[in-house]
Length: 312
Image (cartoon, rainbow, N blue to C red):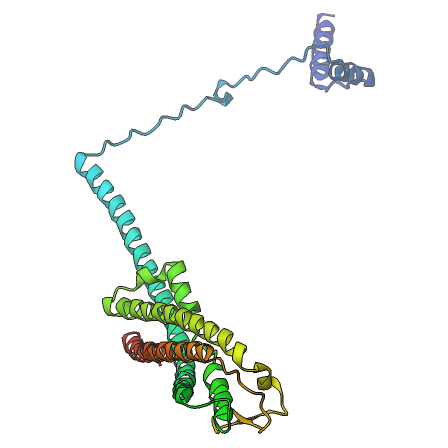
């Protein structure tokens, strides 16, 4: 009997151990209870406690590296390098501006040379016309000792008058380039004194030419006013009485018919006409002298500028 009881106890112990080894099966209700904690925001969720303390994260502290202090010489060297960089940039900018100014100066001089070249052509034309006018005025003045109311002096009176007084051709310089030089400040870029002296002389001569033109025009206007009191100036526009022709250089010549209107006999009025003719002839002579000076100055300046700036 004792042996049977002992065997029964061993079997009970074995069965209890086997029950311990069997995994527990969780019911769906238990899962629902577990998830209910997640669904309920007011429920507390307990975090699992880590059993291994070595898994805990440690906060790392970053230490700034120590800055090495610079010496006095290093500060001087850095300052010197900054100064050299700024100074070299300043020099480079000055060099760039210098070349830009030189190019602008050359372009302005090229325009000035072209303007002076066109002036020389016009000066030739005006000098020729003025010289021709003075010749006819002198011939007109020589009629003072004749009776211009009679032929053939009457025809000569009209012929010399229209050829001598019909000239109202004045020199107008092409001053666009000069004005550009003055207004744009390019003239200050020209460093050669000879260049600026030539330009200033050219401008000065033209001012003298303009002043003489004003004097000539006043004498010309007074002369025509008095001439119109003694002679019928409408004949100059009548193709039946005056015929125009042209010389080899395409300049106008006049030929008169025998039916010219009479000339007044007022001797005092004739004397005034001859006097103003003398004034006009003298003014035109001085005007021609100034024009020749302007022409020579223009030629000299053109040659000098082409050589100085290596222009073609």
